[in-house]
Length: 535
Image 1 (cartoon, rainbow, N blue to C red):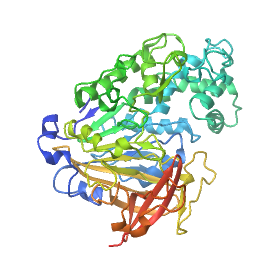
Image 2 (cartoon, one colour; image 1 turned 180 degrees about the vertical axis):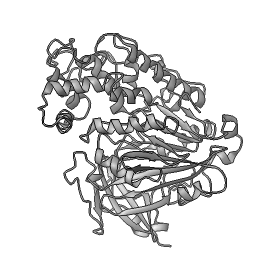
Image 3 (tube, rainbow, N blue to C red; image 1 turned 90 degrees about the vertical axis):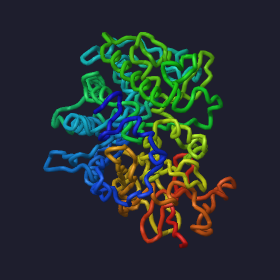
Image 4 (cartoon, rainbow, N blue to C red; image 1 turned 60 degrees about the vertical axis):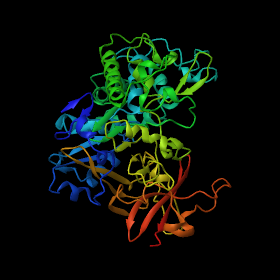
């Protein structure tokens, strides 16, 4: 049963979830194979997770070929009986086949409505802007609503600075500017044109055709609109929480009162405040998104341009609160920027590595006060070529509470250190993934209690090598920094800046025969190295 974005697994209730301390910890069994756990005698629920496809049809097909819950029977997609599939958001933008990917993802949700679950990403939420800024389907291409610019460009002098009144009035030029300068997808206009040309051969596709395609897809009944209306901001399945972005407080934020899982978007508009507990927050944040989507769907006419003013307060463009919740930054009237407390946009990373909120014991509060939560899974910020496990407490922590992030959309740029392996690169792919990397996160839940009985990953790394399913939760070396006790001097990252000289590798994956993947990052630049365990 689905209620307010909650998925009940078997007989699970909130009371059952918090009935014992054991329910707050990942199962000590921690099966190395999710399928082995799934076929165990106690009733189990198998959940598969992937995220941030971003219009990359080739990646989606690689995932389907890899998946242990999804497969093709001819042209038909089939989901394993009783299994659940969670897509973590950011369905479009950078892969060249937005329409095709949307048809596939929406089709899965239509075919398996109770077992396929969609999360709203920032690249999804910002498409709500298209309707008011580019116009309704079949409206004028030259007589558009006045566009006053976007609030985050104020004072910059750039195209879109509200003080300059210089946003293009032509629909195609305005859409090109929006995609390139305000949505982080500079190639999407030409990608859409190429996709339409492929679908409409031999007919010629014009810039106006591309505009109409975006207008139709991003209307409430269009392909993108359908995804937006089907997706949730937060999804709880048993003792697992799925969001697109991080939940913890970023290092830039000083004021704790407006951060963490207590933060509620309806209260941000200068008022502060938060919820009384995890369940209150969880229901409120999903109800907020639901109400915003309803307002956006029922909006008549083009309305005003939300992006000029921004903020959570109501204005002439309905649905603006959810658009704001998908943004990374707030800005006051004086032009001062501050981080937006959003679980759609926030990250567990700082300069490419797990930040203090992820490593600090303070984050234990989320797990302690959340009716037995054991695991948080999300995407949003790319990290290398395999999922990033973070054992809460970081460093040398043996904590059984974990975060796992799954966005690998820059896998084509990973650099391998040590000479053993070499990235195959982007290989001409339209996205940054290249043509080999793919991964799947598998979670096994006890169908009666909702406890997490296993968390595993499997896939293909950027050098093209496959790695078999390994236990993320059960291997205490994974999701923390390497130690000299386990890896000797190889625990330390070689070279780099003086600040990096004493950094340790972060252990991401197990490859078998005592070999692990260690990673280190600065920003988007990720380095991998094979580490051999000493004993």
